Length: 75
Length: 181
Image 1 (spheres, each protein chain N blue to C red):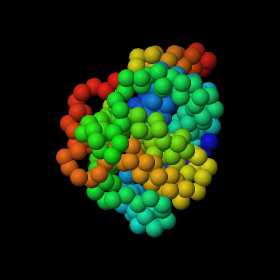
Image 2: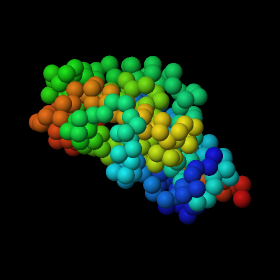
Image 3: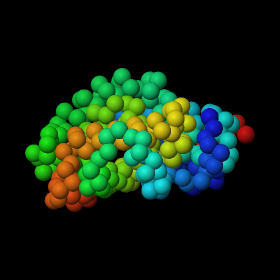
């Protein structure tokens, strides 16, 4: 499972969005009203930020610690 | 931090991985199972991760494949019960609160899976178009067109008109209210 060559560079859709925009609009189907696009972008970004900041359940941290301990036992 | 570099990387990516799982499945219980399974698989296949490539994209690949292989059908059933009391999505902006966070998830649940996964890979896990294309084995142009369709459909489902003040603005104000999954 490999990624693209420049894999570890923190390339992301948001930053690419500006440069890709022209191309995107040119090749694409439904083009949103810019005000709607802006509004949606704001709400969606908010939604994403909120999700990423959800607390991580303890059971996931516990699982990771267990995997690590198992690994250490093997070494 | 544990001192094990691989474990530390996993810890660092956990918020993104879980956010992706939550929004993809629309269910807390499915998301947590999905993340657990992804962690176990990632750990046992650690050797197949190529140093220098994007670790998050590698984890997203595992999670996405796990979801589409095993959980898709299940999650749809769970979703339905999880969201019994979820707010209605307004049609044509008749409800000012149409764009609350919960409504956003509900709208995302209604997107076709191929559009939903692209939207969330780009928006939630912040992968590049190229990485999303590679994960889904599609062309970059297809990523862009799915993304645009997803946006158009979301705007429609949320009843966004671009005129303020709207439900969208209210949703931003509501941010501090903890959202329930």
